[in-house]
Image (cartoon, rainbow, N blue to C red; front, side, top):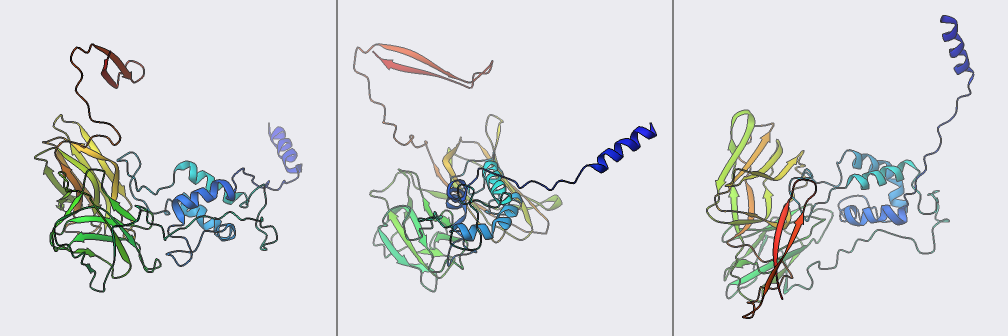
Length: 389
């Protein structure tokens, strides 16, 4: 046996050492990588912005190892919400597929297209170089009804002679190098309007909803630079947007808890946690009258230097009697870290684009089509759809 082992070792030792083969990839800057930069990066990584630019191929190539590590660590782009607990329209996290693209591209010497890589010169640049797009001049919500500068005292006066409905607000920084987030409130009531971040630069409400701006009211920002665009509702709304604030108090094991029971049907549009040093995680849940529990947000490893709202893609409807709970875990003795919810109450809004039902003519005959969704032995949804004939 010893002779066989010795023979095997001699055979292995006699094999020549082969160098590692160069990694190859089909990922190209001009195709997959520039799309990722457009969707997640250039809001901060642009000229005269918060971080080093990632607009051109050369800029991105030089930073490819830093990009790779930040993506693997999920350090950038900043987003603390854990997937699967709430669907947010301003979610800026990389998908696993996008992370794989970035890692593969970086480890394969960052090809621009057709296998070409950066050589430190511009000789190989194509006639029309592909770049990531960073358009900071465009108003995402369209042309505002009024654009107002933010003065040194941070209080903006829209000079309202009568009550107006506010359906949206958009912010433009004067210097993007110094602004990470901006929160807006009504001075007279303290109501939260919305929070600007570089990747989601506006606050807007679903069609049919508006926030009430009383006559003579003012908008307060927490920066003293830039300008805001205000979008007014054409007519008064019967669905005013309001606030619900839960302020957790310190409990055992540095756990902060707050609970509120909803007195009527409530629809959540967005929420804004007030961050404090030591807060490690935030969980927002709803215990329905049926006893079922829905987790509406779970965020962990929250970066204090990147405060962000969580804006639901669709309003989250909660029936009367629902118990809404906020639980925060901290590593320090935090006294309170309130969470503000933007809500409206009453019956839910009809889905956008769905016409209102019309009365059927007398004498119409009805037949029913049964639509079933689900697989296996579990029927997830059954709809009986009346069809006139």
